[in-house]
Image (cartoon, rainbow, N blue to C red; front, side, top):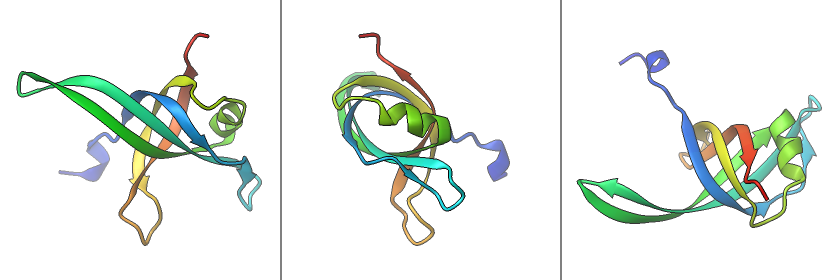
Length: 104
């Protein structure tokens, strides 16, 4: 299958559990690393399954500035895509492209 035709899109509701300091790339673009905690019940093979995981993420530009103002524990829905943490790592990181905070 052509890699260009396969979507890599993630949408997840989670809580913000870790937030690094806002930094900037050498080009001056804001960047922020964070971690999410997710818990839900999903259907698998017709049976409900409890799901619990932590996800590392990174946000750039507008989303980085938006997340930098958030409080730990805040619920959010995040849209983005997965990529390797670095060229030398196979660990996955969620790249946030759109963030919606829970109504407080």
